Length: 280
Ligand SMILES: O=C(O)CCC(=O)C(=O)O
Ligand SMILES: [Fe+2]
Image (cartoon, rainbow, N blue to C red; front, side, top):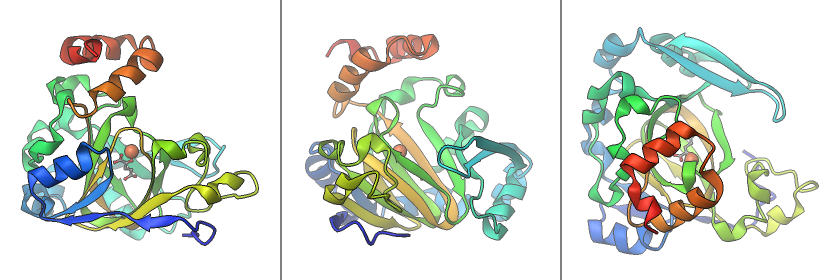
């Protein structure tokens, strides 16, 4: 990873076994990202999802993976069985490997949701939406599985919701930039891991945070924060986007001003399940 041009990356805060109050008061209510240790290790998923039993049960399911070899090039898709894909991520020599990013597993295997226990501070009104409605709507929860060097370009999350992400196996490098840095990250156009400072000179002024997330670590990404992620080791992670009283103002303003009308189905789901959006 080339970070030599970026002089203003600070280490992200790390909390070891924090109390609910600490996470809520110091991070969620302040809309600040953080890495949390000591939560995921107690989840059944942490032991089960990389084991033989998991593979035996789910290995035959087919998953759709994607890659984009050139920044402006086409997105290529490839279907694998989960067991072939899990072999691929450890063995591939592809320069740009295929990445599984939006496997809406809970619509197909609802029992997998029982394998993880989300702390109360990540309360999620999106969970009111039935799992079978999630497919195609790009909401709520995904398992990510990727080879070394796969990753996600700079972005903010869906509907300006917040998210948590837990690494089960592998490792991820994260960078975060607050909403105040939107101009310096060129609305997400810059590649923070290999910045083109001729095209994006102000990126050198952007103040960001970085961390490496390892197995058992959970990341909190607040609403509106830009983030870019690279898998520095192949592995499996799980992610949920959430909306609750801590970010409803941001989500509602964005939704009402920018999102209504884009998808009739999503508008309907929001109206039924998250009416708070219209109360703000
Ligand atoms: O792991 C990744 O590639 C992206 C994760 C992400 O963007 C998120 O959890 O919001
Ligand atoms: Fe994200």
